[in-house]
Image (cartoon, rainbow, N blue to C red):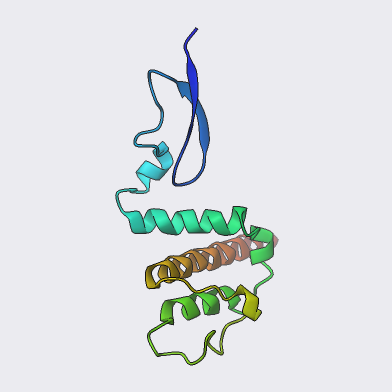
Length: 136
């Protein structure tokens, strides 16, 4: 019998049982994350942040679907513009949520967070369009 081991993708957290002598993961990343171009750390970090928002913060597609007034986009804009002087306030006046949800970090980290919020909004728009098409 072949010895098996569990490997966890560092990017997405996916786990797989693989033969110990023939790893499925390359450099601790699953094939999907490798296909995304994990040599591009920016893309990987955005995808990790999106997964973190869902798994650690509890933001599901259903909760994202409740935001119909550009809240996800406005939050992304706030993180994108932090430190640029383009928006006044900390958080900026257009911040759509309660003050306790405003959690700025470093410039790069805020850009990653903003990109993940943009992805959440795109996914929300795609789901809404799919539901609209299904109802026609």
